[in-house]
Length: 168
Image (cartoon, rainbow, N blue to C red; front, side, top):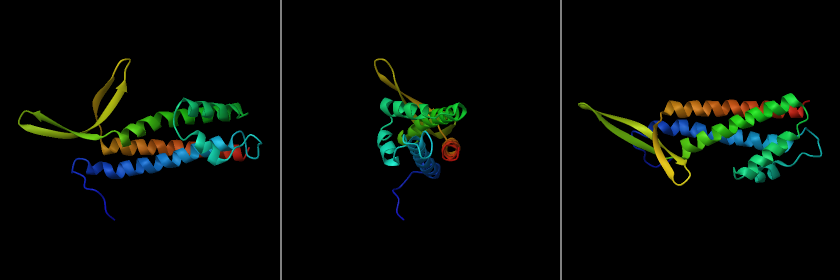
């Protein structure tokens, strides 16, 4: 197996980012399955997973409206609330995942007296009214691994809601 070279400061991030990407893909698949299976197994309002995936392909206002519309079809109030909560968590973690994977990992070098401290930084771009600003935040492989675990938990919660739809 061949990989491109990575410097010593970024190498510890490779494995956690791989787990994050894999858990994110599983969670996205679970969201697609959930949207397709709503309101319940065997309902005429169900749709194919391919159609649901197409509607969720780009995470924008249309996709969010589609999800809200699909969730509103769940008749059981408690199950609908559970589904809304887990989808809200998914959306929040999706943005964090996006930043962790797609924002470049920079290396910060700071002098502290006689020593030089090197640590990883992530770029965070914030859209403001007129411009977009950039901030550097400290980030660790452990933070990315924790994010992967949080996304795994959301994936399991999505699967639990799907199971409840299939077995009323």
